[in-house]
Image (cartoon, rainbow, N blue to C red):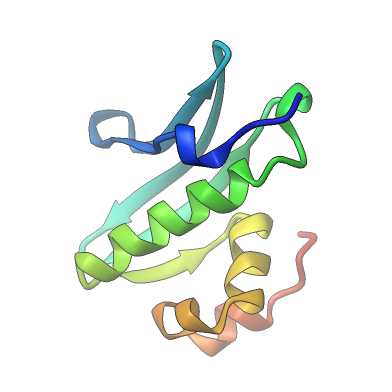
Length: 106
């Protein structure tokens, strides 16, 4: 299924501690936990039918932009978010170098 990312909005559901978007009734999400001035991104999930459309990247950008706007240090426990930050230098200042050196599979 092809998805036009311009027509998809990320919603921040603070009470559920997640960023999500819905396409054709299917929910993609990125979950987190907050500890003071730190935000721990722990899981990104995109339904199989929607994989390969850039939805995880859209979620990661929204979550990282939220962290920056709120002056939060990012702890990318989620392998996808960690890899995303390593590939996008504009977000690398949000996480410690030690967190970014961790391997993608844990």
